[in-house]
Image (cartoon, rainbow, N blue to C red):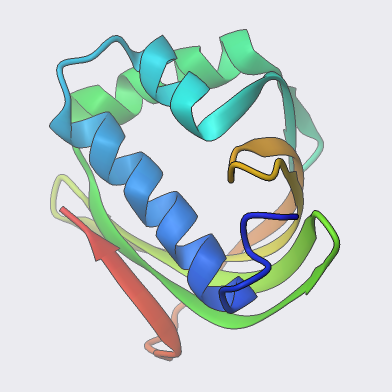
Length: 138
């Protein structure tokens, strides 16, 4: 049974990304341990045509930890089918006084324990203040 079988897919995806970022920024734990808590060892993420496996994802977390952004995710819509979720959300990030809004079209697969196995994302920068299913991290 998928981890999001008893939870609204919009809430699941908001909580997944929020919790991942909170753990990444709040812990002194090795970034690999945090990545492994939220992703399978064979994770593949493709964002705007750029492929990241586990090692690249871990490397990607280093500047995030260094820059310590704050943000929130507004999920506009999400649907689940089996172990997959499709969602459209806006990621609002504040880093070094600069504010960004990035709309994401997300297609992902998750394990029964809630870890991400694969994801495909298309992104674009937007200027929006829409608030739907909202979740914030530090």
